[in-house]
Length: 492
Ligand code: BES
Ligand code: MN
Ligand code: ZN
Image (cartoon, rainbow, N blue to C red; front, side):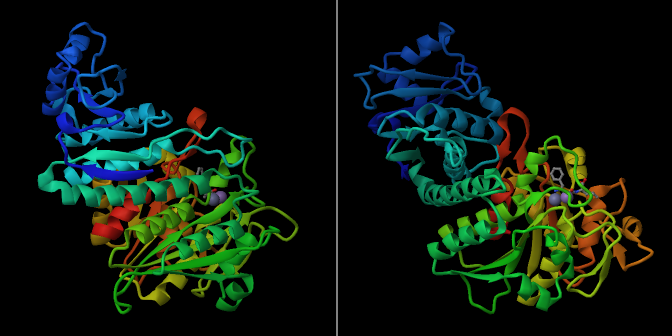
């Protein structure tokens, strides 16, 4: 499937299926009005008879329209015209794409993108059209027996005004890349832990490397980690049969002397808790404890496709967290790559242990900033729910840039503090610090722990425990925060 920008007006557009907006007030946009008069007022009659209310997400397919150029018209409810914002626009796109995809219309021409949307210019509107397409059409099939190939479109046209078609074209390209990056991220999060192992992540990283001349991959194994003194990371993998890895993917799009942004993603492919074993219910969901890794891989996947002039390094420490006779025990003290010693009071606080060594390693790239992404704490789900990611940083400037990126990409984060009074909760009688800080402020003390390893860097931490995954009926990976990360890399 390919995306195109079309600057042809609805009146002159031929298409197997034209997508038109209808607001709930009964008012029509210019496009819909023009098509309605070609149809002799058919849309107006549907509205006044109450057959089509224009409520958000409502759709109706009009067929048999010889008087118009397109073969069919899909009406899409957009709700109140005055409150047509990014959220309402995304909802309209979702229902349009859900109605169109899977049908065997050869193409579709979407005119929702011509509407004015508060908070979204032509670039954003086109970008969201492509992004939402991928979000809506992604299906998990990898471990289900033969699912039918769905029919589909050869191409999708997204309407833009000729005055800003260049911006729209750019938005469409970016949205396509971000959407694919999100699907890539979701697939990794959804795959079970018996398939998505650390070595599977290496294979996926190889595919990204192969997709672009600007990307190169380096893989460290456990003996490399030992030589580097990564005692914290190695303590987490001690109880498992699956070998641990540390992946380093470099994207070079600018002069090599330009400092890169480093993204670090937590890659625990299964978190049983280790000796501090988790309770049984919903433990299956801990296969997505590599959601941070999946999102930074999704981000570089998108960046490789967009090919901007930036430098980026993606680091993924990855292993399982399992109990066994060889597993790390509560009370064990380990030495991290930085030299700081850690008393492991709870083996279920493993994410920070693999991240701290990866963060120390990240400094060798002399980065402009380091951002780590991790499904780090259950406390973050309690604090912010599934709507916003937790953001913690030692730099106000970096934190504000990331918050802004989240707003612009509609993939929001919310900042929590890092402060000395919380740091005390990590005091240990037997090491430089403990790996847990008690029940209170769990997201903050986890970030305080990480901050001890990034003192000389511009660093931020994004806790995605709540945002990367949906529980319940729609159980599965969301692809967040790929949009935030790509926004930050492109415009941050
Ligand atoms: N991977 C979990 C955090 C998590 C919990 C992510 C729920 C998504 C949903 C992490 O490794 C963990 O177990 N954290 C502990 C830390 C505690 C032992 C200090 C937690 O949040 O309970
Ligand atoms: Mn854990
Ligand atoms: Zn974990």
